[in-house]
Every structure is written in structure tokens, then in C-alpha cells.
Image (cartoon, rainbow, N blue to C red; front, top):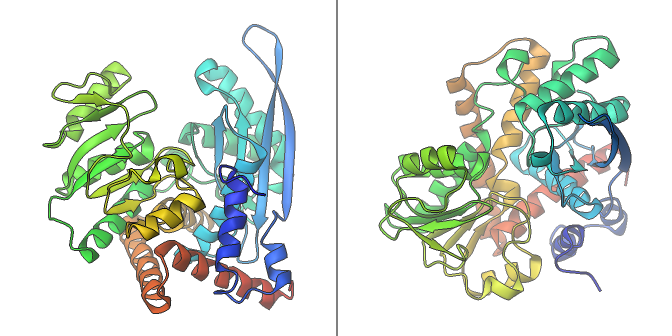
Length: 412
């Protein structure tokens, strides 16, 4: 019996759910039920005190039928094999939903970056690429930033790769600083795409003009989306970081919150707000889980009161909880659509690297807008046509596209 809190079991449960709808043959299902390649590496790193410490790292290359593997690298103490495999599967669906010619992968290192110096972090980042450089690259597998990794870390990884490959290959990694071939608009791309989806879904559901929003997670994605939603006229009533949750029913000044967080390192004690324990069960129009997976589970799902949930984290709702949300008529815009803005602009970054021709931020975000609008329309129409949830529709669309590519290649 599968564990509903095991990320990769969640992936398999989701596949089983749409198996009949997608008319998947057993051979196709078998290929889509495991990564094409899974790599585990041990990374020795000399620490500042002269001692050598060994860190465990992973890379899951799930499917490359539609193009080179593509997926982020996260540095986090809770990284494990199941999580990395699940994230690589979700990346496969995400690239397919948004219509870019890439597959899906994911990587991670078990580490608490807060315990590392800058020098140790750089040596660890370079060690990861040294261990994997022969199986990554623009035509093979393209890494990107994820939880607790940054543009600077991508730049170190790019440099290490180019030293080993003995040539410039900026397209081997995305999310880089603009100075070394990164794309303008990439930093805020995931949040910009998320806002587009949020606004379209809110309009579709006839939510109030100043709909109330609660956002769990105040990192690059959650924090940026909070600022964008606030600027767009939404009433952001609650925000949560890893340590605390702040709430004001009249709305928070997100710009002031950002400044407070920069100065204090936490949201706790923000003037004019009260500190609460649980952001997920607030009575709001829109709930945005933008932290880690498995936030909404069977234990708390019945207390969720939002009318619309926009998944900016990967896998924040377990399959069992998802069914209960559907029964409650709470609309969920799934992660593989809602947070696909990042991979869309990562693809545009690769295109710019390959052409050695770079666009303005406005041009990049315009292209992103078209890609997200087309993806959302396709998913929404399929959902209406088949009378299925948006998650089922997004997964159905993605799996069909991946299966079609596999069939064309003669894999199945």
C-alpha cells in the first residue's frame, strides 16, 4: 500500500488516476512510472577548518522523449530519493503542459546551506557538477535553480562545467546571472506566470475585484508573487515564511513587509499584523501554497476554506487531499501549470544562449505571457470538455504529449 506522504507514490497515484482517460497502454505506463536514469553521488568537500565532509547528491533524469532533460537542483536537508524522482516527473509534465521541447529531471544535495560559508557553498556546487558533468549539458540535461540555490550557484556550476568541457556552453544551465548569459526576466518568471494564471482563474470564478489572498512561502516565488498580487490590486491578508505567519484582515502592505523581512530576517512581529499558527485554513478567496510539498494533507484539508488554490510549490497537495478539495468544489490550479513560468523562461534562456542573441525583459515577459495563456486555455478547455478537474486536465494533456513523442520515437 502506497504512502500518501511519499512524493513519488503521489506521482504514481496521479498516473493511475488518468490512465483510463489518457488511454495509456501498459508499456507507456511502465515507462512513465520510473526515471530513465537515476544517479546518486557522494561529494567530498574540504571545509574551511581543513576537514573533508561528504555530502550525498542526486540527479533523476525522468523522460527526454520531447527534448533534453530539464530541471532544478535543490540544496535542502530533507532532499531524498523519492522527492527528487517525483520532482523530475512533475518537470516532465510541466514542460509538456507549457509546450516547450524539453523533458524533465531534478537534482538535489542533502545539505543545510545556512551552515556553510560562501567558500564551502562554492566548493559543494562545483563538486556536484564535477560528479555529473558528462551527463548534463545543453543537449542532455539542463539544470536550474530551485530551493536554496541561486543564480550565483548556477554561475559556479556553469564555470566548473566549462572548465571540464574546455569550451563555452552557456546553455548547459539556466537561471544564471545576466552577466554570464542569463535571461532578463528569469528571476521573477515563475511568479509572473503564476500571477497570470491566478488572475485568469479569479476572473473565471467571478471572484471579487480585490479578492483576498493568503500566500504560504515568502522566498523567491512566494515573495515575488505577493508583491505582484499586491501591485495588481489583490488584498494580501496573510503571508508565511518558514518561521512565522502574519495576518491582517484589512490587507498587508507587501512592500513594507518585504523591507521588514530584509531588516529582521523574519516576518514575525510585523507592525499592524497579528501572528497566527496556520495560514492554510484561513477564510480567503485565494490560497497560494508556495513552500514545500505535502502542505495540504488529509489531516488539514477539511479545514481549508479558500475558493481557489493556486499551487506555486511543487506537490503541495496530496492526492487524497486533492479528492476532498474536489468534493468541496474548491478549484485547484495545479503546480505543473501554475508554476510553469520558470521553466518557460528557462527555455527562452536556452534559445537566447543558442542564438547568442538576447531579448529585453519586456520581450521575454511578452513571450511568457503568450505561452502561459495558451497553456491555461488548453487545460481549461480540456477540463470543461471532459468534466474533470484542472489537475486531471493538465496531467492528461501533458501525458498525452509525452506519450505521443515516445510513440513517434518507437519507444512504445
